[in-house]
Amino acid sequence: MQIFSCDHCGHPVFFENVQCLYCGSALAFIPELMAVAAIEPVPDPPPAADGAPTAPLWQRRAADDAAPADAVPPHYRLCDNQVHHQACNFTVAQDDPNPLCMSCRQTRMLPDLSVPENLTRWMRIETAKRRLLYTLLRLGLADPRADDGPVYEFLADLPGEPPVMTGHASGVITLNVAEADDDERARRRVELFEPYRTLLGHLRHESGHYYWDRLIRDDPDRLAAFRALFGDESMDYMQALQAHYAAGDQRPDWRPDFVSAYAAAHPWEDWAETWAHYLHMVDLLETAASYRTRIVLPGTDGAQRSRTADPFDANSDFDAWIDQWVPVTLLLNSLNRSLGQDDAYPFALSENALRKLRFVHDVIAQAGQRVAPAAPEPVPQPQAAPDQAMTA
Image 1 (cartoon, rainbow, N blue to C red):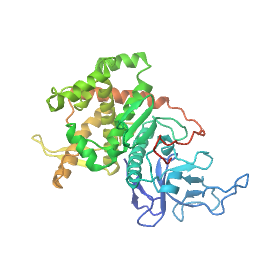
Image 2: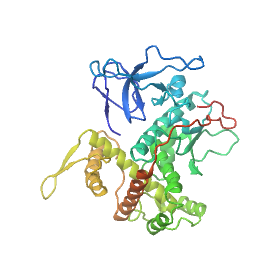
Image 3: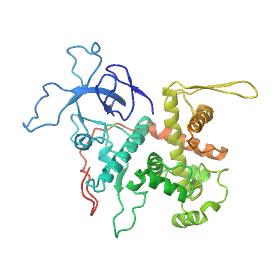
């Protein structure tokens, strides 16, 4: 994720910020501009055509000497989840009939938000989802002007009901909201012998299943290339997962061929883990490039210098990413250790894992070029799950 700056005062601001701490400007992320912008209420907004009350309108607040006096800037509304819950910082275009932003409208089911811990959990998950969406937008896999992409269900376990299972099926990504609790997520990470488990990681992984259906499943050439690298996905999925979990920490060594132990369970999971890892790389490299990171590593052949380039730059390529990746992750882990923390990046990429990552890179590069803009259309409002009141 890049670092942004307040376009009123120039002070650094971040993706989740709703106010500039330097000049006090209200902030929002405008998907059409892919930017965090300073905003202000529209003075004397025009009334609705039918005379009905309208939601407050906002416009960008530029530097005092930047905007011509006669300029008419675009108008936006705040996402309804910000208005009612202070839970979102995305804007909605004035002419979009949906009260929810492009991220929040993808959420179809929520837990009972009258339960205080569920409100906090939901807000944490939506924050991670917006970060995922930002990367998908940058990669050309999502369009801010189209109602497209996966549907999300964030659900809580209920007494007497089967536990909510995190996963993907037919375009729907389900996440147990307990994963938003740090202690519960850490417990599951240890129980499942995982080195890494985060909300953003979950969503990136499940988005991989969604995009496998969209980009691989129905393309014979890509499916053949996928099988040559990842294996035959028609093998029994449930049987493969049962064998994986039954092995516990006695699983065969997965490191020569996979990005993680879970990737070795089944070709679908190999793809989803590799996809998620690719999104990790894109986000971290963008962050490092945004800070203009330059790293000097000592070596037997003298100092090795590395400058991190923006992965979205037109001249950037996968080989350059890998050359920059190792110095960045070494710095990241060293900084963590200096604070007494475990490695933030507990992975080592084998040659076979890198081949799979390159395949993901090529698929995304081709798919991103095909995304066509579309005008926003009304979509149904989210519905509450049975026995789980409150909608987004």
